[in-house]
Image 1: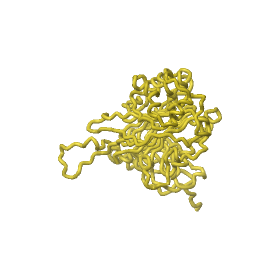
Image 2: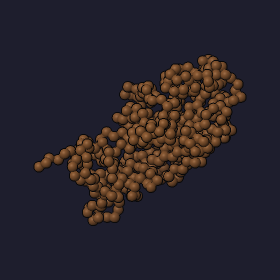
Image 3: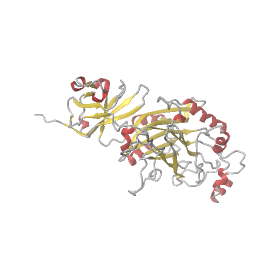
Image 4: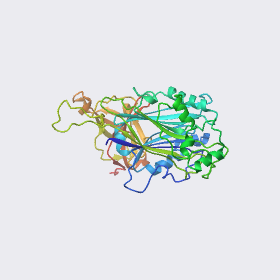
Length: 453
């Protein structure tokens, strides 16, 4: 596998609920031949953020996350979601990639009221996959035609403020691939003296290219004031703002504009003998959605992810991998669980695992108990910190000091009756800064009530 398929979406939902079918937004079809994305990165703005909603969303998934999980749950795992008031960013991965994903981390920046309020700003999630680093940014910048300077300031505040906790990728643009999306709120330039009605007439005549020449975002990119590090495919769709809610008609209270955007950056030459690249497959709006005064925008990409170089038989020793060959040597698992037969719903339960590669163990590492069909990394039903529940076995202490033979016994305390069914164990490596990697998953096993006799 040389390429990963990424599907990105941005939608300012205007405090609405997901009352329309989201299949079109996610390009989900019933055709089995259609290729599925390896990752979904979905960004929302103006998700309902009243205190009662925020409280419920800390206990349960917000309605947008829940609706998307219902559509993706069979094949995808929610790696992480991040919320800052109305800003929401969610990243999903195909299940098959889970054990090759490392160092999931997140950041946020408030830019509202001079950095005091989170109604505007950005949330970001970064991760590594097969050795390549990806960073997804969801931003909601200052509104209105005449606040161009504020949008530029917002952008620069975000790129300077955000600090990740993964060495070598502490800044957004240090990553191999960056995808920046959101309601960026760039309008048409003020000196473009056209009324909303005149702009709509240009849209109806499909003079999109001529109209887009007056876009503020492209203007500041050319001047090097903001977003100049990024690339954007020219939109061929009409302006995505402002519409009368519930209709496909523009609301003349504001001039139509391309507020909702998706941009990207690739650091092509981050590695010797490897050239990274992005191929954009689509960039479109979805006019059938009428839940807010914005239309959602989606984009699909192929990104080059090099894989481990395995020379063919009889290859000369001095031969080198080509630029298209992969460099990552991630193993699919560095924590290997022994086969678990079953657990008893009453009493203590045990499992065993060994380290198959050098792993820096931390007091923050933990093992979660998950239902067999779990669809999010935060869906554990109970957990234990490794430092409290794991002890070296006799087999480990009598063997070599090498991590490859180090084996542990894990003990979980009593489980409540509601845990009956099929489950698995997941080992999480976690730093003090909450950077998370999944290093191992056990087999599926039943939790049953043992016979009383």
